[in-house]
Image 1 (tube, rainbow, N blue to C red):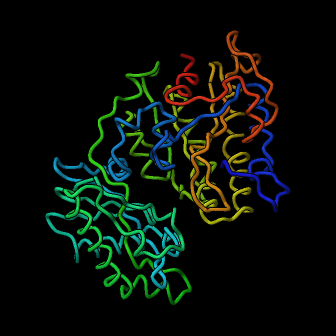
Image 2 (cartoon, one colour; image 1 turned 180 degrees about the vertical axis):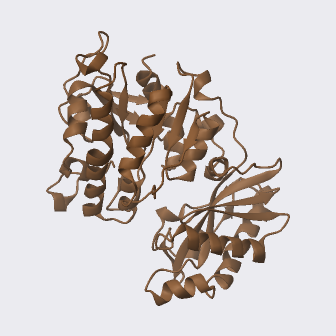
Length: 401
């Protein structure tokens, strides 16, 4: 939900323009700061940002988005295989029109991915359907030392300029294979009945695949071995986040109607988080909608998604946990900014708040005093007590270590 000042909003960010009384109240009663979720040298992706905010060292433990999503899908990455995210995208006149094939439905996408497995799959190449436009590709003997451009970063760019490139001579075969699969998918997909129907309805067709973020199976310690918790859950509509949670030792929780878009089931996610928190120590609750609005460059929609998050999810959790006898710490933060102007991610530090009320929310804990921040946004938290954190600084502050 983080962004930059927008001229059409009088120089305010979407977060500043949104009506967020609950987040503001938690900021006033809690402590705030900035978190640098993108280490120097890394592209500002959700996989890097979310691993960082959970305290993992991405320089030694990150193995690509595909491997994380495989865990969410329950797919074991065999020894010797490379995993990569495989988007269904819309290509138009030789350019990437959008990274999501017009937010294709999961049922449509599943049919297309199974079709690609029949037509292009083999003992060396395997396609697995995921959710909406987000899918998985496994390549036997694949070399991850390749440059794969995230499609959401290059909308409008000529496809030929951002095809897969080998970073070392030993990875040329992998790059050539992935480029062959992209070009072959452009021959196969346009005439599929799913795409013919979408075009007849005025929707963008899913007429190409786009593999990216390659890697192998990661080795990560569970959060329970690193921090003072014995159990935890992850709630998200996004396979990447679920998979990260699985490797972090969290139990994935599915919520009916969770879409990853502004249409997601906010109330259902809030209820699921509360149910999990009644019996577990920790819940990692992720909402994708504002990121997607940013990728669409839709300022009004982004404001709406932030207000939905506020009124339909955060407020419910804030008010319900205030009735509980035991203390509940709540943190709110984006994983990275997504600028509506550029329609892509940015590496700027993100604002965060940590709200740690005392028993029955009557007072702050003795060792936790509120700072001077009065509202929650990208600029007000500069007055926060935490300053700018990085590495495992945020998660340790959250766990009061």
